Length: 272
Image 1 (cartoon, rainbow, N blue to C red):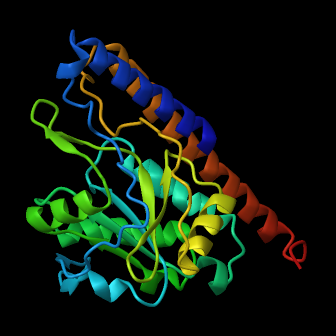
Image 2 (cartoon, rainbow, N blue to C red; image 1 turned 180 degrees about the vertical axis):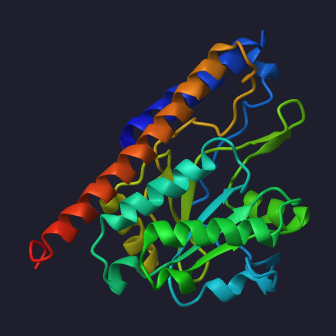
């Protein structure tokens, strides 16, 4: 069911992109034509920028480096589109890895590109994903940050993350994916899209741990943005279907957990 939701999201995003592009008579005037990852493999990012962590403390970026690889995602906490899907896909991929420290030993950083978001939103999002992940060491290795616009733009520029704010939709338009960096801040690889199999995560983190750099990832033009979700539009109908699918998934999961608990209650020796 999770993969079905991802599929619906993919269809929805593809439609939104097509819909937005179709409205432009001249592709050269399309405001989203430059929204993508410019892959800057082997570049070392500056680690002296200051941000705010989920507890409201000011931190320097370098305090999350030097000991282990870093997986970085840029997005925003109130994103109505793909940011949560990317996080869910990362968690799902990690859950497929053996729960050993060696295989999951990296820092994860989510940085909001919206300078108006605060540490309260970051903390809520972090706690939500720590519960989903269910791996205790992640509490010390996952960090959800906010920051001032100059610092956000500098980091985004260094990793080639092109984005813009759309005044009409009140959304940020940005690409979908993760950046994997070595412990010293060198860009090792890009994981683009909305699905991250365990083997791809493991391979990328291992490369970064060994200070190695991958080949460029295949270009992936999926944007976190939909310019037209007005009631009555096709995009709006697809969005409604997507939300219904999400609700059905939650209901199905609840029924599964309820039945599993009832079976264990009736036959407590069955799980021994």
